[in-house]
Image (cartoon, rainbow, N blue to C red; front, side, top):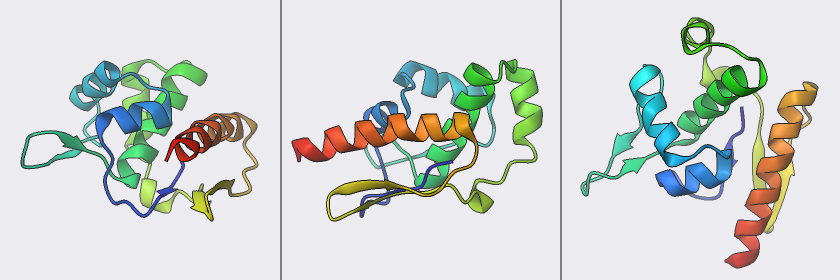
Amino acid sequence: MPEFKINRVYYSISEVSKLTGVEPYVLRYWETEFEQLKPSKNKAGNRIYTNRDIKIIMMIKRLLRDEGYTIEGAKKVLRNYNPDEDPTDITIEDGKVKLSKISDPELRQDLIEIKKILELILSKL
């Protein structure tokens, strides 16, 4: 899944929603269903997501929406998924979003969509 390197360690739920294309209420629901998805909370009680959390979200999204798994089926797949070993990468260098080479066409399409969103965000900074 993607690695977001924007010189930031944490992302808000609204930023993650824009980056992943998953609505905030869905992200909150997934937290209740998938034990791997447990973002921390800051002192104000707001969720703060890491790159690792984003990789897990993208895997859940792919399993449920693209591959047609049920929540129970996705839970079984996620038991063997380690986002720290996932080599997929998105980086931002010199204000440009770059994708690592991806052989999986479905995953590449997801990353292309995320790349477009990141470019839009960067253009507004």
